[in-house]
Structure formats: C-alpha cells, structure tokens
Image (cartoon, rainbow, N blue to C red; front, side):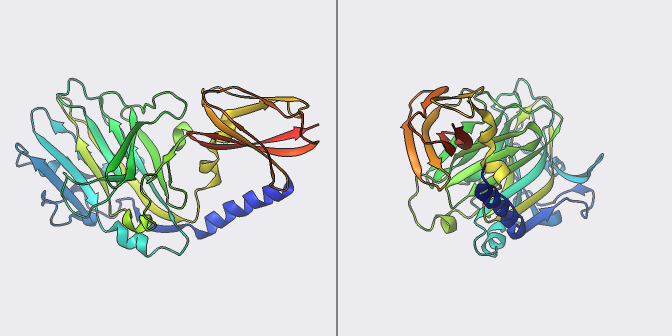
Length: 355
C-alpha cells in the first residue's frame, strides 16, 4: 500500500475510534441475584429494565425460574434463560426495550449500529420434538407480541448441532435466514462455552456483518437490499434487543449473556470490513504478464477492478464461477496497482506491483 493509501487507512481507523459512541452497556454486576422478574407477560420490567415473557399452553407456575441473574465464575453476574422442559409447550424471551430512543440520540453521522455480547452456548439438546434454536439480536418491536416480531439483525444458535445462523431483514416483508459459511463451511460453536459475538448494521451501505472474534471469523451479507424507501434507517431502527428461547428437550440447557453493548459508529472498522483481504493470495508479485489469484476457501470472484495509484480504473474483468483467476496484466504500465476483488461475501483489496 502506498503512503497516501496508508495514511487514508490510518485516518479512517482513528476517525472511527474518535466518533464511536456507546449507547447502552450492561454487565449485570449491579443487579441482585435471583429471578429477573415476577411478571411473565412482558408488561412490567424486572431487574435492569429487562422484560420476561412466556407464551404457550402449558407454561408452569414456576416459569419465572427460567430467567435468572446469576454469579458466573470469572465473569461476575450474568443474565440467563433456560430451555423449556420436554412436553412443555411454551416460548420464552428476555427483552430490553426502547433501544430506538438511544439510537435516535446518536451523534450525527454515526449510522453504523453495533451490538456485541458474550454468549454461553449451553448443553447439547438431543431428541427434541422441535427444531431447537435460541435467537438473539436486534428486533423491530417494543412489546411482547411474538407473532409479528421481526429480527432486524440477529443470530440463532441450533441447540442440537451447535450451528450458527444469521437472521436479518431484506425488506419489511422479507426475512433472510442463512447459514453462516464464511469459508463455505457451516460454522459451529462448541457447547458449554462462552463466545464473544458482534453484529454490525451498516445502514449507509446496506450491509450487515457478523463477527466471531475468537474464531477469527466474519460473515458479510446484504441488508435491506429489497427496500428502496429513502428513509430506511428511520423505518428499520432497532426497537429492542431480545433473546427468544425455542429450545425444548429432556436435557435442560441454560443460555447466558453478559457484557452487552450497543455502539454507534461512523463506519465499519477496517479490520471487519476488509477481512476478506487475508483470504486471497496473488502471485507472482511483482508481476510481468500474468497474475494468479487464488484462495483456499473456494470463494467465487464476481469481478476484478484494477486501479492505479491515482485511483483511476484501468482494467475490469467479470467472472461467473471462478475461484482461481489468471489475470492478464501485460498491457499495464510498470507501477503499483490495487486489485479490487468483488465477491458475494464482500470485497477484498490486494496490492500488485507491475514490472
């Protein structure tokens, strides 16, 4: 990377740091041990303004015990939600409301909204009569109505396999559910383990990022791409953060959350948005006639754009199903170029020197 680009990247990282604005933060250490709430209808908030909700035909009288503030070794206090016992027909949820009020008071220009949290994956659930999942993330409602609640940007953990899925909006009437396959392989989390997770809602670019730092994994997807309303940020401002428990089985699993934080940023951090760079190799470099572009994750390349150091587009190639590319650069003058590799998972930028 030349000095101008290096300075630009450095400035972008510093700018992001200086304008990051924490809107909400909760580590539960100031809350008392015990049941989160006595109200399971979602009408009255409990400890820390968390609402607890159950719905179904056979929720027992002691269902309030499913939601707890507990001590956790090496973490202090955490909030927990328990899976539903076998043959108990119920869905349970914890919810922090009025997040939209905080977001609407963000600093002007901070239009990337980040949710980060620590998640404890609980025990393996087997022989479940339903597909056991726990969902958590941003939702579009400030009430306890399950039937029409939509995930603006959320994750779901499959309790019988450990697989992680993404759930987010393409439009008001379209919810996208996708397996997280950043390397074209299903993403599994270990059971009974704490994992740090982050979701970035990149409203300016209509992109969403899911980050699992401990696995050095980031997944990028389109977000609200089917909605052309110019006021889409206002239309889809997250109203709450919520965890839905749809896990039923003979094994009782306890899911835990800690260090929940919502931050408003002016852009997605470079280490997240440019994660694809490390996936691609180019050789030889310096090059003379042909540059080989490869990756070990079988990521399909849609387009390659070649720019000179002044930012001028000097070459463009479009592909369909190629993962390994032979790019002819014979016609380029000697100098430094940037290759912009466009894929379904995002964009990678690689530097090339032409001899």
